[in-house]
Image (cartoon, rainbow, N blue to C red; front, side):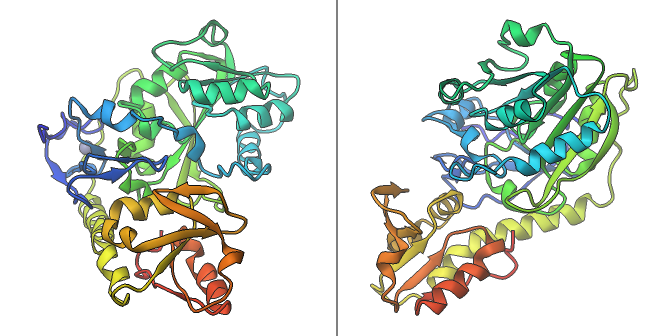
Length: 391
Ligand SMILES: [Zn+2]
């Protein structure tokens, strides 16, 4: 692989790219939990602070091969919780505002269509469509009767969508996966009705957190970066800010924009805060690099280790702490049985109630304290994560 540095920064034009630390030299983990044989490969623009994944010719195939299931891992996505999209429906309707409901609504990158369907129920008079490139996700959506069509914005857009005229287009945690966010936003803007609104959400890269450790996140953007991509797409920014927290939406940002931006794009200027952001990102990645040693230290030779959890954080650990993962006997979750994850059987936690076992809490660090307390109350001991790795 040619470890080429990226082309000039899309936002400020600078060519001074600073490599960010890889966690493992030969692997990384996608947002859908797939472990791929490429390092993280991120760089930060020294001038404006935008973080990008370097481009290498063979990467897209490596990154997206093998049943990529991004749609299953969106914020709030929990296939077993029917209320998972309540927060997002609330956010989108609040941002749309009072008054007339939109007549035509499009969700770009709608995954299995659960949110599209929820929006359709919220505005039953509106024509609501979801468009999604993954054939698997579209099949899941259509099997449930959700208004979802297959297609890729800017490439192969189905007729229902290409006619445009959408009063509201929204896209939840998709823009950071696209090779050029401005092109993506411009392609969406072309489908807006006059006076229509475009709402996008994505991780907020201002505080380094888990979004940085996935190679399929091609950009890590602060709110300033996201707004700049929108302006470069010829859009006018109406509002932006944090997404409401909770249920995995922490560290997320949202942007509301409309047609009618500046005709001439003015690139970003250098940001004096870029150096501090670079140092914070490196420190965060260094925590990941040291995580395996920190967790494995207290383990005695041959001591059996159980893992509480079976989701995305299990994949994060399996990819980035491979020697520790080798030590894991089994995963446990409430009600788990007859499955496996990252090569380990998944047991029902109730079957391990006897106490006295050593556990690794492979869950979002925000809830590790709770899990550790619960397992401790059952007589188990839990490996402590470094406190600074709290995201
Ligand atoms: Zn830049």
